[in-house]
Structures are given as C-alpha cells and as structure tokens.
Length: 148
Image: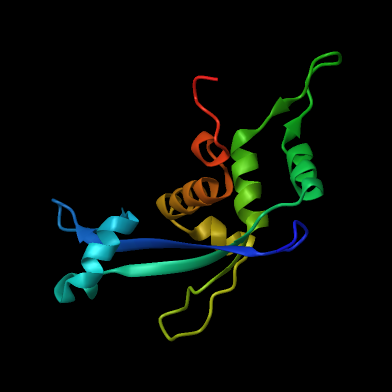
C-alpha cells in the first residue's frame, strides 16, 4: 500500500422505518451493533435496510482547495471567516464516490450533488460521522496519552 494510492473507504449506513405514535413512518438510523442483532432475527431482518457507500480520502491539494472554497472574505485587514456548513457539504460531495442505491425498479441511482441534497439529513449526518471516525486517528491509535 502506497501513500499515493486512492483506496476507497467502505461505509454502510443501516436504517429502518418505524411507526411513530401518530401512525406515520419515521426513518430510524441504526448503529452497527443493533443492525447485527437485527440480521440474526428473521422477522427483524426483513425490515433492515442498508446503504453501502464508498468514500475517497482527500489529497493535500484537494483538501486545501476545498477549504479555500469555504472561506468567506471579511473587511480589509480581517481574517476570512470559515463556512462550516459549506465545508461539510463540500466534504460529502467531494468524498462520497459511490453507493448501491437503486430505484424501486432496480435501476442504479448515480451519486450526484443533486441526489446527495435529496437524502434525508440523518442519513448524510450518519455517513459523515462514520467517515470522520474511520479517517481520523485518535490518541489511542497513535500511542499518545490524552494527558500529554
């Protein structure tokens, strides 16, 4: 494995639709542990859905370009401000490369800015949180103590 490889990161998001107290369906995001338990139960397994995605780690140049897009100029002599909402949007749209989403009749739905914008916020948040978790190394992985 080379530092210059463009290996993709696989990230699934598990979800189901649950009835709320008013009788309508509500999207429920499931953690991996709950999804694993549901897969073991035949009745629950049929209600479990998964969106499998592939994500690209950004290169140094791509990251800097994306951050520059998210800077907003301020008055002369002041540092630019940073648009964190735009940054998150740009990260998803630049890093999410593929998914297995299909239409009801089985046709693949392409990954595009428009299709990402149409996803429920909870799905995008969960995917972005998982992407952050798998791409950022914590102190325990680097051998550093949190008290240093």
